[in-house]
View (cartoon, rainbow, N blue to C red):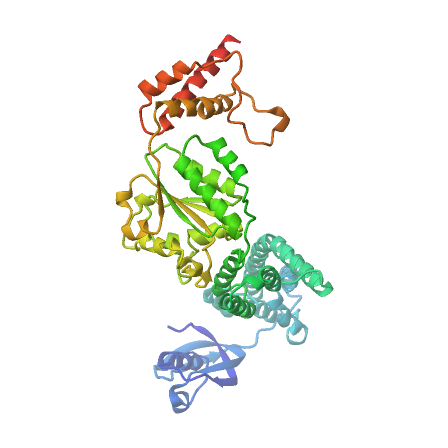
Length: 558
C-alpha cells in the first residue's frame, strides 16, 4: 500500500551492511519505498552479494501519486510535483496573528525540549542556518522531524497544504513530546533519589578506605585477612608440623590471588579460619594436687569410689610424668546415677577444659570426621570443633550415649570413632575438612552408656570400663540430705547462698533454715516407697516438688 502523497528525495549516501543470511524482503522493501519517492536503482547492484544497504536521503519536494504503472520491483509510477508553498503575510491579519502565535509556541516548545533532552540539542544547533522561522511550512516540517510521532501523524503533516493546520498538527506532536520528556525526567528523578543515597554512602566509604590506605592507617580487606592469619600463625609456628605449615602457606598464597567476590575466595577463607583456630600445641595448665582433686570430687558427688580412685590414679601418674596422656574411660550404669555430671567435676579436678557432645542416634560419619570441602556449607567434625571451642589440645571430652550410635547410608560413626579413641592412632587424626594431621592424643575422652551389649566390640576394646551400680536406700538418703535437698531449696528461694562470697559456687552442704526442716524419716519413706529406681533422678523430682509446695505455703501465710 502506497500513500497518495510522498517525497521526492536524492540519495546522499549509501552504506553497505554486513552480509546476512537472507535480506531479500528488506532489500525489496527499500527499493519499493525509494521507487515511490521517484528513485531508480540498478537491480543487479542492489542484490549484489545479497547485502542490504542503508540510505541517507535528502528530500527536495512533495509529490502526488497519480498512478502505478508497474508493480516491479522496481515500481514504476507516475507522479506530479507540488509547487513550492510560500506564505504571504498581510492577506488576512487574523490568520497572520494565529500563524505567528503558533510559530512562537512551537519555538518555545523546541527550546524547552532542548533543555530537557540532550538529543534535541544537535538539531537545534543547525536550526538558524537551515530553517527560516518566518516560514511556517519549513518550521512545521522541522518541528515534525524532532518528534517521535506515529507514521500516521507524520504523514498527516506531510499531506497538509494549509500553513495554519500544518503548524497546529506539528505543535500537537511537539507538545506530546514535551510531556513525554517530562514524564521521563520524573521517572529518572525518582530512580536517582533511591539510588543517590546508597551511591553516596558507597562512594564516601570507598574514599575513606582509600584515604586510610594512603595514610597507612588501614589495609584492604584481603591484606587485613592475610595479616590476621599470619599473626595467628606466628603464635604457634614452632608447634606446627611441616605438612600443616606448607598447607597454610599454600592457602595464604592462593587467597592473595583470588578476587574477594569469587566463591573460591570464601571457601579458602573459611578453610584458613579453621586451620588457624585449631590450638596447635596450646595446652591448658593441668592440676596435679590430689587433695584438691579429691575435695572437688567429694563436693559434687557421693560415692562413686571406683571412678574417683581412677581419676586420682591418673593425677598421680601425671605428677610423676609431667602430663596425663589421653585416656578413654567408659562409665556404664543405669540412668540417673550421675555418669554425665561427674565428667564435669573430673575436668574441674584436673584443671582441664570441658566439652560434651551426644552421639545418641547419630548416623552421619561427617559429624565425627567432618565434611569434604567440596560440599556447600562444609565444616569440620565435633572433634575439631571441640579443640576450637576449648582453645586447648588437652580438654576433657565427654561422648554421651555412646551405646545409642546409629548407622545409615552416610557411614558408620562407630567405625569413625575407632581412630578417635585409639591412643596409638589419634596422634595424627585427619579430619575430612582440614585434611591435615591433628594431634588429639592429649585429649582425655570419657564415654557414657547404659548397656554394654549395644557397643561394637572393636570400640569397646579401646575403652576402660567402669560400672556404676544403682544406689541403695542409705546412699540415696545421704545424697538427698547432703546434695539434692539443699540444692532444691536454694533453687526455690528457701535457702540463701553465702552473701560474703557471691561469686563462688553454692555450697552443697549449706545448713537448713531453722524455720524449715525436713525429717530424715520423711526422706527415708520417700526413697523406700516412691523412688525405688537405681538412680536419683526421680528422687530429685519429688524433692523439688516438695520444696515448691513449701514455698507456696510460706508465701500464702505472708
